[in-house]
Length: 227
Image (cartoon, rainbow, N blue to C red; front, side, top):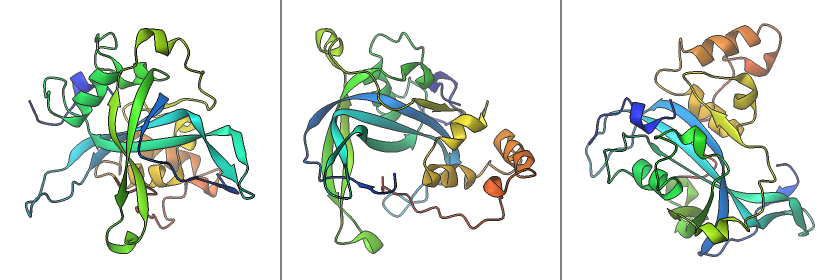
């Protein structure tokens, strides 16, 4: 489910490394949209929050790249930044999902469908946040804001280097699922409605021919990037 207007939530690589990314605003394109399904929510100010349907979005920074193990720039490996959040109807104007959607589609051409926004140019502002708990002592690059880009600037944004990915739990495709990072796959499989879902059945059937989709494997739900 990737259409905000159909949301079920209540509401109004090996051998490469990521160079330090300073807090700034970067030109980018939306490269991944993934339906994470129904996910438990962290308590807020000591109060439990009900589960919510979440999506993950990933942006490809057009002029920031990964480094190889020798510190050399890999021009075919652009830097990616991701964030996940509950998907609420667009009528929920203060929801992060609505703010992000309208930044990418201010005219509403996509009619709330995140899948239609793939490859749209935008501006991504980053912030460096200190890790907590087991991540204490580390600094993580997180997305602080996503903004629309001027029409005349969009024309000069390079095309995506990486293949875009759209994954929808309502209509799951194994090819799209396979292109998601392992930690994202694990989070989807850890969703509250994953057992018995269409994806679960697809993976169960595929596991008969390969151990790649063995649900008996231990699942590590620790995010690569804490959101």
